[in-house]
Image 1: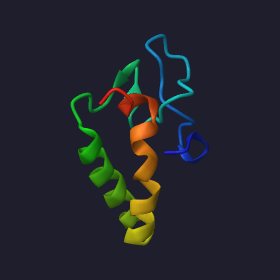
Image 2: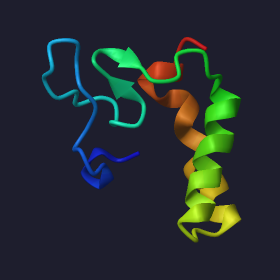
Image 3: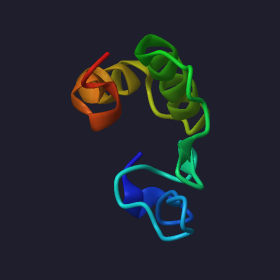
Length: 76
């Protein structure tokens, strides 16, 4: 999620400061909210949320193509 679209402006680090790398849905108090989710599971979740927002499925698929390059998923 682009942080400028995050209603909380990003997640939070363990010290309570704003995290500039991850959104509030994924990262709170210095930890991932779903630490065991796989990249493929996250793609399904993101596509589902986009469809709820009335974004066409083909666009949701395009938007998730680069997720494997995000910092969280680089080593997976």
